[in-house]
Every structure is written in C-alpha cells, then in structure tokens.
Length: 125
Image 1: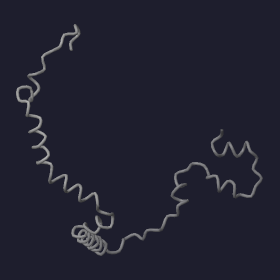
Image 2: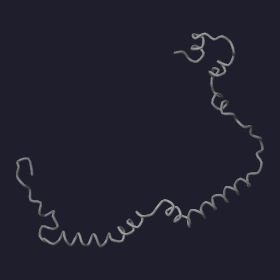
Image 3: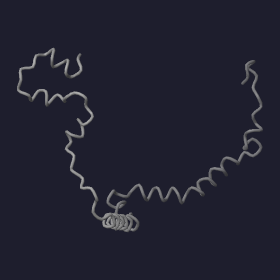
Image 4: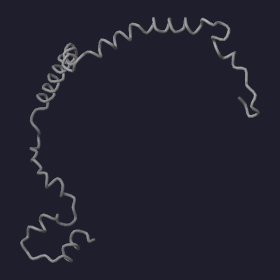
C-alpha cells in the first residue's frame, strides 16, 4: 500500500501469479536438490564426539607428526645460543620498569611504616 491507501499491483513480482502450480513444483525441486545435504546433516547429527575425532585421524595424525618433526629440525638446527640466557623470575619481569619499589619489598623491610608514608610511596590515594 502507498501513502494514499491504494494497493499497488505486485503480481509482476510473484512468479506464481500466472502459474498456480509454480510453488508446488518449486517446493518439490528444492527438496530434491537439498536431499543429499539434508541426509548428510542427519547422519552427522547422530555422531558422538569420539567418532568425530576418530574421523579426523587421516589428516590430524600426519599433520601433528609433520609439525613435531619440523619443530625438532628447527630446534636441532639452531645449535647453542652464543649468549647464555639467564632465566627471568616472574617478580623480576613484573618489576623491572618500576620507578619505585614494589609493595612487597616495602612491606618486607621490617620497619614501622606509617600509613601516610606508605600511601606516598605507592602513589597516594
């Protein structure tokens, strides 16, 4: 309908306007073409997780073996590092760029630390 309430002719847009059996034939044709895909989906709906994982074995196992072999070749090909790397502790990694001392080191001093000094050291509140 338009603003005036008149109906617009839409028959030209309806493929079944001139042929009353069009939609029945369309439905039959669409269902025939979708039958294989619907059957495949119905079969997969009954699969369990172990069955799906087991069906991946032909591609998953060789790919995992190739990835492991490639990683081994890359690790063996690098040789020894010229500069021995020292392990970095988690606390050192978290506090390496801090300007002030971290809170655990301030609290671990054993000194009596009053609240205003503590708040000033940690950035204030």
